Length: 152
Image 1 (cartoon, one colour):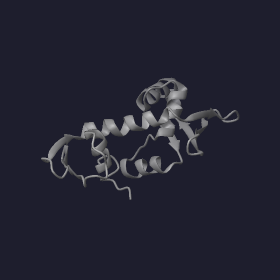
Image 2 (spheres, one colour):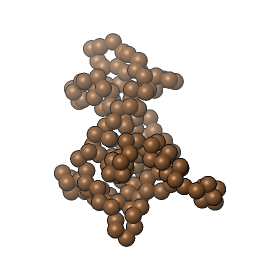
Image 3 (cartoon, one colour):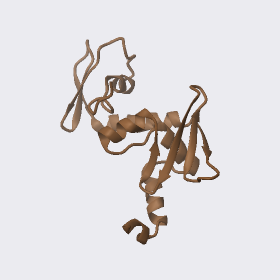
Image 4 (cartoon, helix red, strand yellow):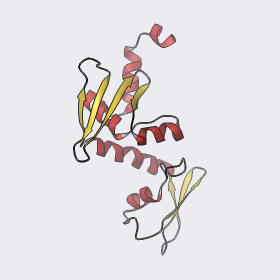
């Protein structure tokens, strides 16, 4: 079950970051103020930067986005269909001035626990539109939106 505590700072993320095969050891992860405490049985516990986990969280989704196929809707240019050919799944992503909205579980979990989200489907649309990050998209949309629209 996904919770606020394990969305970014999970044992599986720690295993990937440390290069350990997850499931062979019971990895313990605890959030402590500005760091993450990680203990792998048989090894000394260590503190890891939250920034490392956050970077891993984003890069993993960006990497997964590269395998997705994006199609822009003809009648609604702000809507995109994102298809995962391997899984046969399809999600709709909508671009809005304040970001991108997806119907997938990962996006919904991020919004619920973090207040905002950017899933692999959103990153696929950002790539399709020529943006490398959500912040670059937001900066571009802010620059192209008239201030009268932003004030409304």
